[in-house]
Image 1 (cartoon, helix red, strand yellow):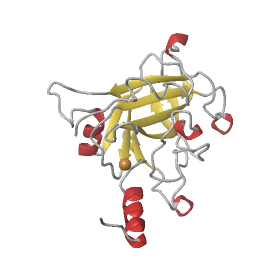
Image 2 (image 1 turned 90 degrees about the vertical axis):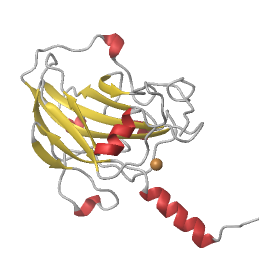
Image 3 (image 1 turned 135 degrees about the horizontal axis):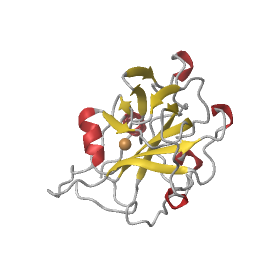
Image 4 (image 1 turned 135 degrees about the vertical axis):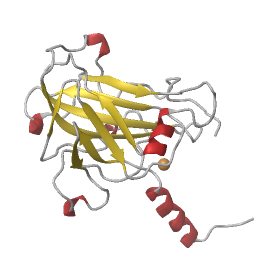
Length: 222
Ligand code: CU
């Protein structure tokens, strides 16, 4: 029987912490915006991204960190045209099983008073299992792992205003242990069509899905 030494355990934990990921920058309508780089945000530039604490996943669907990985404010925001492109970039990402989702939340006023609470979130983009062919890498997060970005189009019909945009990776490589990786940024949409999603498309985060949801509690072969 092999008993790992304390050093080995510490090394494994350090490797684990470094092996997950988070959104670390954006390109919005062709303009590059820095994000948090992890572990030393105080020394970085001001960003449009709501500050997250580390690369580790959220492991409970009811954790408040499900909303924006703990981030509650950011000093800057980015303009984007309705119909324009938002690209989120991950400096590292290591899991190829699970969906990518992109959500918006319309703030009632300024960003400082916009905490993303209440049933105001709606999904604008997603990629789940891309099979056929059915393989352990036929998933949206495999695309992120390959290209280290995900680009979405802001709906052309949407109402103008201040929005939170939330990128969520759900990693399903570990059976019975779904891992959520959500980060948020602040964007100001203009030139839109004044429309809002029907209430049936709106949800609160956390709690948009239950832990027993078949899309969350899924086991995939690697
Ligand atoms: Cu990980």
